Image (tube, rainbow, N blue to C red):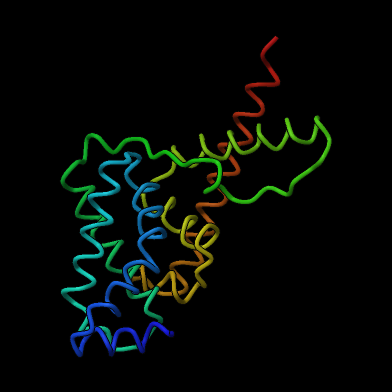
Length: 187
């Protein structure tokens, strides 16, 4: 059943429809929360808060964007509140390998070692980016949101998202290049 239909049913008091929306998106919301907090338990707390706010504010969903875009906009606001609350603990953000940009699989042992090394370099580079840079990369390349959807989620213009994405990719590439150069210089 489409999200919009589930929203209508939930607004009419159908608890099962609300449960279906929750179940459909809780995994993605948790994954986003985890990439932004770096802590499993705090990510659970953030995800629960997002889903609670989704349920409470469901009547404000107007269908101007997809339900997922609307939900991730709520998620971004909750994450911003989280960062304000735990500012000094949020220096590092951890991603696991499944969440990293997909690196094409290679079948040789050498290829597998290179792929694993590249993923580790990407993870380390992402940890050094600002919250906005991590967010735009996560939304665009992990979640697969369009530029327009990402702009709505981040409350920015599409031009600002394109610019932010371009800068974030360049920063990440520079961080990875500098790490590779440092490794090459080691005896």
